[in-house]
Length: 145
Image (cartoon, rainbow, N blue to C red; front, side, top):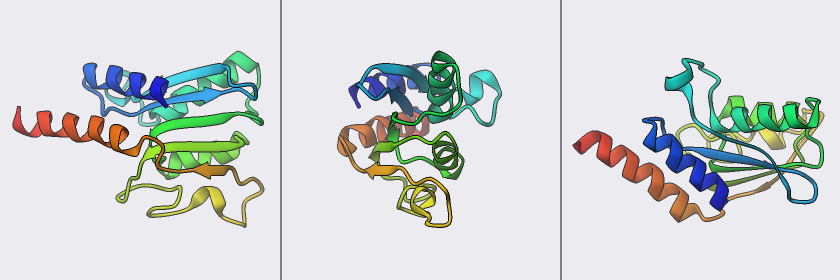
């Protein structure tokens, strides 16, 4: 999670909403990292999770991320939760809960929907306070200059 937090802080320094993600391989090696880059890339899919999963898939030479763990500082949205299912990620670990858009147990629970062919394990609220404070501080600076 500390690597994901480093990515989130980099995103904030670039003016992006501070969310960071890391994809770990089956033995814990870092296969991909990512941070939000929607503003910089003008890509609506530029969420940290998508960026990290693309990097991991590129490194592995295929789209299947079986055996991998996606670690992200904020609970994934529907797009990112769906992408983790499609990529066959084994585990999703997240920090701060997102009650407004979270799709891994808060607002929705995409990854544990029994109708889907793959359901990653979920480990929630890892370092939640620290992950949440990065976001809170970012938005406070934005609102109050």
